[in-house]
Length: 276
Ligand code: SAM
Image 1 (cartoon, rainbow, N blue to C red):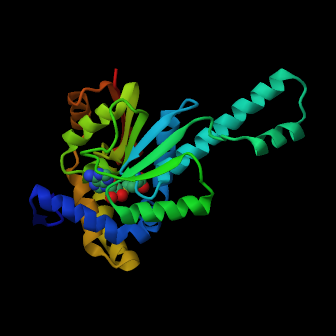
Image 2: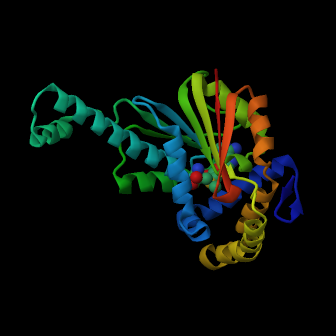
Image 3: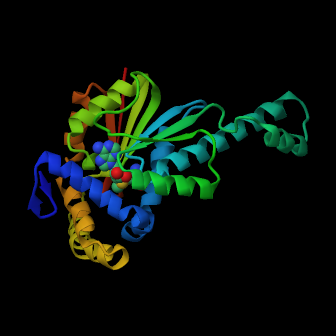
């Protein structure tokens, strides 16, 4: 296992990954915006668009960190539920918009039964996530659980959707994490992974290398005072399997109808699979 520019054992990798995220937690969101020039927001929106959760979806977001996927999910299902209610009310009779607005104020579950559990191995990342949830007004329908993707603290067949965004490359045994994803999903449930991948355009690839190796560690040092963690980030991206290789790993874990979509010339990819 290669970590940064040192060779480390599997056990050490877990510990180092923990310290990387413990150290970057406070600056994690601002660094994400700086390093990706804000594009990570679009990639995350696309993950939600691809998920297209149905009313009442039970989502598990693993390596959920500071909650970006969970908050997008809550906003999505809330808007979806509102639209549904409006359609139903308008269809019933000639109800005024004032009456509809009043009904929403009294509504008990604005999420229409949908729920999300954020699971992450790092309590510092979860702490920042909880602060963000309070600041953004997310109260209901959201739970934070400390746990390892390789040994999830949940029963079998529990969730409709499992997401992992920019998380799986940090896991020591990816095959183990994929098997756990399969175990906790209900039959018919969907696995969705957003992760850095292999760039498929030679020109973009050269620019991307230059940016990754020359700019990202410098940004890490200047903004977060942490060159090493950001050097790790770049190295871990380079070592992650290609789109096709990762697709095979997902299939090996028992998922079916596995597909992927490369975004931004393959800088990232979204993989999808079903437990059938
Ligand atoms: N999903 C969030 C996002 O997209 O902004 C956070 C991604 S962050 C790059 C990676 C996260 O993976 C960190 O919060 C880290 O603590 C978590 N992580 C690393 N190894 C893990 C493991 N074995 N189990 C659960 N979470 C893990």
